[in-house]
Length: 342
Length: 148
Image 1 (cartoon, rainbow over the protein chains, first blue to last red):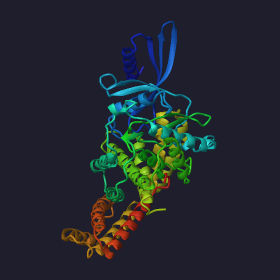
Image 2: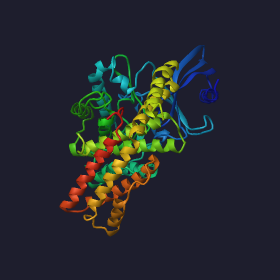
Image 3: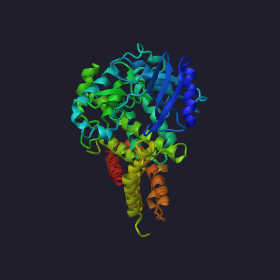
Image 4: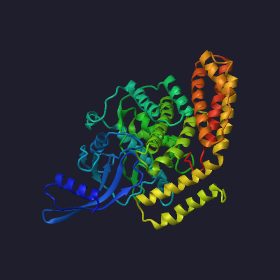
């Protein structure tokens, strides 16, 4: 048994005092968790007269990551949406103390037998479901934006924001990240930031829950091409719903290497589905603002990862790949949104 | 160096992506090695052009600064532009070229922000030149396996 397995076993025994013969089996790290170390494992125990086996996910804070986020917000989002029309895994335990697994973490249900890799989802056999996936992807996003954050209890874990402050707060946050972490000058993104400050968007009609990283690759798809869970809520916050729509349309997520948003649907179709599901209108000018913003945010994330790797805080290969491959594409996307590149 | 480093990197990447990945079971290590292989193909691409693209870019930035000298309103910025425009790449080591490139690109940001605030035909021309260079610089850095 590895150290982490035994630590996790001790923690679960503490959380489930009624369970007997607790075992953590097949603990395995999953690649690509940019903000947290993600592990899958099988929890086995006896309760009453029966034996129980339950596949679970552990999300543990790493020493460094692409983005610094509050695990309570991510856990809170899973808790708020579990059992609603927005499919998410069941969250089980949030642990803020580092004494159990050396870093804070949370545990949630593992939904098994699914595909999430964007390159796989846009390739056979899943490509036959592209239209259905697009319909579900942007309908679910509409459902998220229809949700009332107060009714879901999310205004207690997410910072409140006035409609007219949404853009300022987000832009200032990500500009500050670039200021702190950039390893070389970023003339394209600096020009984009000035452009954004000169042309503030119309405030949203209402503040909603923003997933923060809503894209192909952050949901689980079953063998029939249905979305079974929306994942990676680590950047969730209250804000302008157009932020999520714009992020989902960013050209860096064109995984099928054609013009389809997220490798699934033409941009206009994605917007139509979202408008229908959310009951909101995507004002073209405001959406254009958030699309430029999405490249600033994206570049800030890649820059942060490069800094973590260079400083030796986290030497995961994904940070280098993200910085080199996504960084250049993100500049291209910014130039595209600003009308300087086709 | 023979075999060429680019050739070696391509072979090493190919070995990782076919043999090593195949030998590892599905999981974190396999994905990590896959990404390592992909990153090596980009290293090979960058190795070949590293000096050339920086020299070309530094030359282009100095040309823009020389053209902008007469347009800028600020004396201090004009002086910086003149000084940078007169500069040259004295070393062709990639780290030195990169250091010089970073200084020039910082100045480009300052110039860009400055001319955006000016209201003249000449400043618009410089602004257009800067945008052209930003597109060109992004193309120079483009990697074959980039998503967009």
